[in-house]
Amino acid sequence: KSGFVALIGRPNVGKSTLLNYIVGQKVAIMSDVAQTTRNKIQGIYTSPEAQIVFIDTPGVHKPVTKLGDFMERSTLSALDEVDAVVYVVSASEKRGPGDNFIIEKLRQVKKPIYLVVNKIDQVHPNELPDIVNQYKDDLPFKQVIPVSALQGNNVNELINQLVKGL
Ligand code: GDP
Ligand code: MG
Image 1 (cartoon, rainbow, N blue to C red):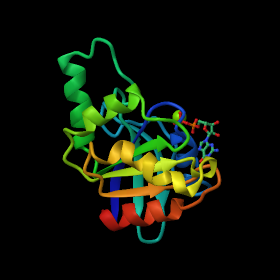
Image 2: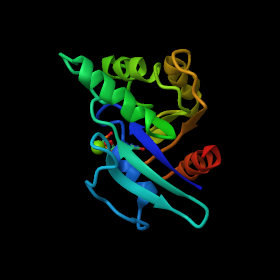
Image 3: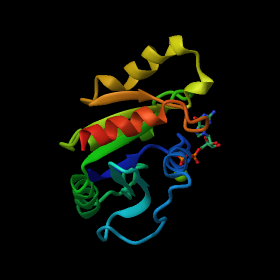
Image 4: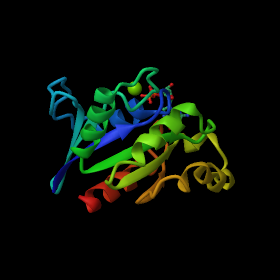
């Protein structure tokens, strides 16, 4: 199995930490080689049964003041080129304008979207439902997966679910 997955989330939620943990020592390539002119390969997860290419989608992470029609369309078509989207949020911070912007974009994407709630090492498990509730009514998430990218908790479950969905 193989596929492309877009990693999306506002700054500092832990996207790079998560990717580093996933790719770890099994780095196939870390390159700026474009998959298309729009998407950048950030890392590749490889196992005997699957390969997942993680890509960045410029223009989705932060609000752009004068987002023209062209940018709007290329961002959306970039998202159309992947097999699934991983939307990363931080358990230790509230939903903010950056999240609203991303959610607005993702609402137009007809691909499986996985909500990854990162930094669960910083909150009590009792708080998780309220954290997830901030997001779950606005998008039809295929799965909600709490992880700690820093400690590696439950990241294998994220990979399992992504591979299963390919
Ligand atoms: P990005 O901007 O989304 O790529 O976020 P980074 O991966 O650069 O992480 C931002 C900060 O959050 C760094 O200081 C990380 O060490 C920290 N961080 C990332 N994941 C976790 C986590 O699971 N738990 C904790 N406690 N900190 C984390
Ligand atoms: Mg980063």
